[in-house]
Image (cartoon, rainbow, N blue to C red; front, side, top):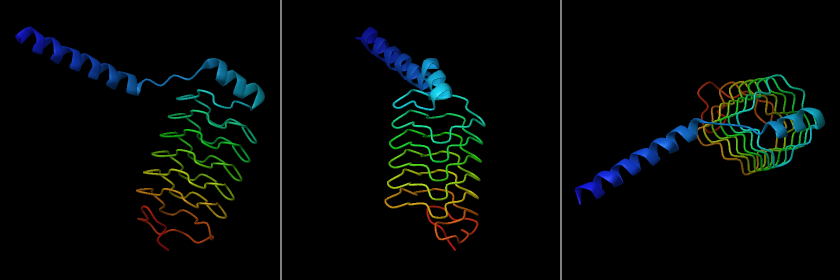
Length: 173
């Protein structure tokens, strides 16, 4: 009986440890990354954790792709097609997403500080706990967006007004 309990406890600890380790390991598919860089067309690709800092991906097609945890700081994604993509925990600081299609994109916990999102389709987007500090959302469609705990301090709101410091979950004007 004692062996069974010890065995079960070790199994739980070992599996729990593997879950914790695997949760921090993010690996993109190198073939998908090369495809994106050469064609700007990579639908349903695994680009999780990829470093695309400063890349020019305007008008790229990333429909349904996994970019969770990716470094997209300063990337040009203007006019890009990203519906249903996973950008959870991605770094999109100072990225240009003007006119991009972000319908139903998961941007929870993403860093979008100083991002250009003017005119973007952000309908039903998940921005839970995202940082949108000083981002430009002028003219963006935020219909059905989840802004729970999103930092909007200093952001330019959809109507062109500035959100006050401390705007969390809503734009306080």
